[in-house]
Amino acid sequence: MAETGGHDAAPSPDEVGAAYDEFGDLYALTVGDVGLHIGLWSRPGETEPASTLTDLANRAQERQTDHHLDLLALTADDHLLDIGCGNGRPAVRIARRSGARVTGITVSRDQVTRAGEAARSAGLADRVSFRHGNVLALDFADDSFDAALSIDAFPHLDDRQQAFREVARVLRPGGHFLVSDFTARGTPTDEQVAAFRETWLCGLPTTPAKLLEMADTAGLEVVDVENQTQNLSFSGDLMELLYAQRQDDVVDRYGSEFFERMRPVIRLMCSYTRDHLGYYLLLLRKPR
Image (tube, rainbow, N blue to C red; front, side):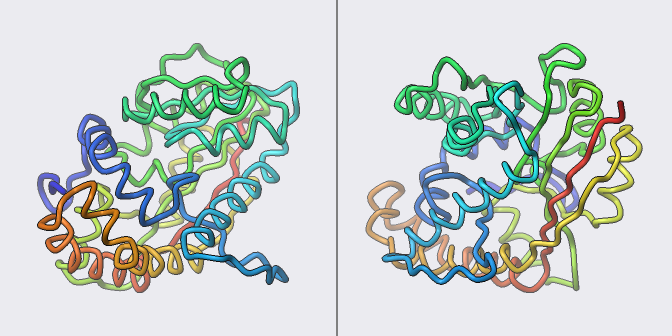
């Protein structure tokens, strides 16, 4: 994987899109292949076992998607904008369970293709569509959507403030925006930061207070805040385990030289995720 520019620089949308075009399969092998976001591992009181680590990862991502839907409380009359839609399967799940229409955007052209296939396979292409798009310059009119969702896309952005403004612009008054982001904690080593940024192509994480400030500046009200750091930490540890367990699959896709080069990078990234990253969900609302 390629590194971005200076130590404080965030990647450009083209760099992020190219990374997902090239390494989307690697993320699916190590994070879970029903979505590309942090999973909800620890729902209280749930003890049903998973049969494999991949099964566990997939269940966690589906539970997280369901949790997002619960927070947004979508109805069949709503139109949702899914920003950073990944492989499209979370959007398909949301549409199937809520009856809502979903439009997904991503900077990865490969993901647009895969997401469209997911919608067609589910028989939902009439209500779920995907396009190449950048949240920093949304190609939609003002007040176009009843709700918006952006899960694990904001960490990639080089201008979160502009993204908040664009989402606020395309939301209808009273519409909700559910967004996740990584936050900084502790003092990681330079090697840990470099490994994280090489693996996920992200800029430096922000703070919860800064996220709330940017949302307010964009004219969005805070409805709820959830600290889900424990789920991020577990996801990081599982990624390292799955990378080793699925060695043959990674080698078949990217070659043995790549697998060996990335093994210590993945280990450092996981230690950074466990010890120095937070993870927050913000539910915001555009005032009526």
